[in-house]
Image 1 (cartoon, rainbow, N blue to C red):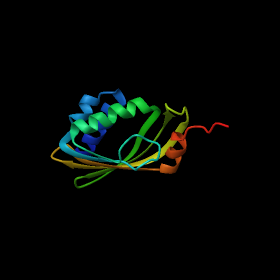
Image 2 (spheres, helix red, strand yellow; image 1 turned 60 degrees about the vertical axis):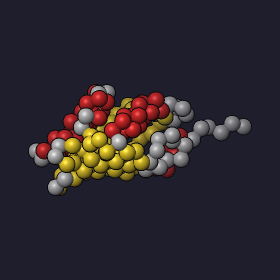
Image 3 (tube, helix red, strand yellow; image 1 turned 90 degrees about the vertical axis):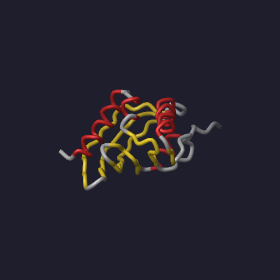
Length: 135
């Protein structure tokens, strides 16, 4: 198995175990963490730096509850690892469920994650973040 794939698998293992300290230890000090912008979500689309990414994960745990999170396919080439996966859960502020297929792209340099880029269906998440209308 590719060494960079092992780093990424370790990151998912830490996330799945709730070991955010172990996850953060895998990141470069100046990591760039990029996710799609979702209307209604308090998460910023771009976060830079380890401690800011730690704050991102703290916020994520306050607003979303995962019932499943499954990385499925790992594709490694050079310093990049692309992961295809899926997740499901609930937005805590609305009680609405989500189910998503996603793509994660990691850049790895000397065993350290330097960049993360995520793609998913933003319209589905925007519906999940939308509060029910009152009559």
